[in-house]
Image (cartoon, rainbow, N blue to C red; front, side, top):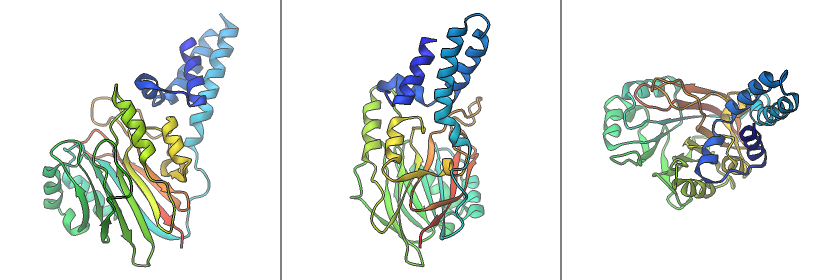
Length: 299
């Protein structure tokens, strides 16, 4: 009981610190369910305790439930712009990835945990023909990331200082003249001593501003129940999944014997843009599900 009450207080107040509490926030939706079940079990034996458990459940549910509903009508006006992001885990099936690109026709593809071997495999499967423009920072391990574009990309090395894995940033100018800036996001997870670096990474991401529409896409190792993520959103971003009513759809882990149960892969969109649709995609070979959003950019 004390644990669940404390959990609700920490989530409501954004009071998490240290590795354990930061990781605990990721499963807050299940905390709301657990507290509700406890309240039901105690209602006949200990009504005061049942009331406390119910209040804890309601506090957590109030934080997470809105993500299951669209935050307004889907955007229909403006220039269409499609974003695909997949943590490839260095092992994602290249044919499946290329088929997704061929089917969905994203304007930009943010690939994290992109190995040098995976770059070659994706091109051999046809990605070089579909998305010939790229800004790659591939590695031989999980630190690699890259951006693939349907239109020319210009690297933005000074946009921000990445903390964690490689996180390339690039600008794309669309045929109509609209400029879009995209970052492939992949901070280290907030495990053990890495939690401080994770917090610094979340603080380092550039806020939207200026004439360009800015998009952050990838594996944030964070959910919307983290204060650091909410602070980032408060700087001028919207979570595409939340906007589409899919904010509780889990993205990790995948293909590990357990169904996905946490939501840590995101597409954050400059709040000046709209979200038409959002999907979560299964990709064989990786422990993450991909995320895809169709946006509408302001004229």
